[in-house]
Amino acid sequence: MSPAHALGFETQREEVADASLSVEGSLPDWLVGRLIRNGPGQFEAGDTPLRHWFDPYALLRGFRIDGRTDTVTYTNRFVRSEDYEYAREHGDVRRMLPGTPPDRSLFTRLRHTLTGAFQDNPSIGVQHLGGTVTAITESPVGVAVDDETLATTGRRDLTTGLDADFTLGHPHYDPERDVFVNFAVSYGSGATYTLFERDRRTASPEIVGEVSFDDAPYAHSFALTDEFAILASIPYGLDTTKLLTGAFGDGTFLDAITAFEGSGPGRGSAPTRDAAFLLFDRETGEVAHRVAADPFFVYHHANAFREDDTIVVDLIAYEDERAMTGLTLENLAGSDPDVPTGDFVRYRLPLDDGRAARETLYEGQVEFPTLAYPDRLGEPYRYCYLAANADGSSLPTRLVKYDHRTEETTTWTPDRTGAAFPGEPLFESAPGADAEDAGVIVTTVLDADAERTDLVVLDARTMERVARAEGVHRLPYGFHGQFYRDGDPVRSMA
Ligand SMILES: [Fe+2]
Image (cartoon, rainbow, N blue to C red):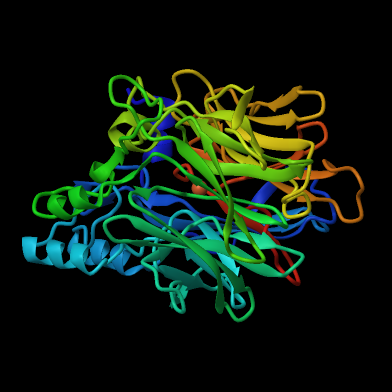
């Protein structure tokens, strides 16, 4: 018998439009808008099972929430990327997905590798760009969708105006300047990371600065303050030679993920180079500070802010690249998954001299750190919200509110009889409220017994449930989303 968490890694092919969900409890009357979440939807191409969690085809899930009437309507649609359409039409993998090789001729695979033909399956998150909701991932392509029907309406080249192969899937929104801030990446024998700002209405980019590396460190997100964009150069990333030679066989990006050798501490008998936090001055574009740290791996930053002559950076830290290579679907859906452990940690980066000091705030496995975004972005903040795993599960089983002031936590566990897996906890602040945690947490919960995914709203102060909208079907576990208020939509997380 499959473990309960395996349901989070199974395809849902059904698409539903405007289904009214039955709401139990009461939504705050100010909560009016649309939650759009992104994540895996289809885990195979024809008969070929996809291998890694980052491979499945993107499925958008939309919840229209109206707290004035206590109503929720639900719509879900696959993103009609070229990769998705090809998989549906031919039953094969068109281009190399992060962990699954394409089912194509050697010549085609080589051509894709040499010309940097990246996959266009945008399963990480969404960005409201140029007036349109756009599904994004670590790809040059964003896929625009209608924000009500979630139907695919067009494609956008996210590297236009940037000499780069792709952009990161976690752009920040800077409310002071009303721009998105992100990095573009290009691969050669090493890698170049280009910091840019993008007008959210016209989507046109302006380059701020860049840095080149001899190796190709992986980055999934970064931290932002008024002064600095902070990029973690971790000693784990792409061996570009291995990627190229892998194209002769059935090698993938994930097969080419490696630890970079160096004189740093590393693990075992293979010394790894140090990690480094690169602090880009957002005015000059220069890397103003470079602060070394012991090796670590990171997907998600929570926040960063200045404290006298120190920059504080909070993130989810893993030991090494197994945080990525270990996320195979065979492992995650298995009965005894070996899940990489990420802890919620705080780094203090001295601006004058010295190495980064690290403190563990909350031991994991935890992921999806969120906060009162964008209000507290780049500022001292009190509360961070996290999704936390139980032992033996590859998916989170509870949500945790961490209080930086008291170092205490408040936990919410789904009140279901069987296993239930809550997703990323998105915070939405109550209008006009002073308290940082005056607002709600909006999330989706996969109820394994009922084989159903519900929308759940918690009071962020108490972490108690105030409302649940009963889903119409089961959804695979998702990645990231945004809550867009009606009117002028801004982001609710990076
Ligand atoms: Fe992410």
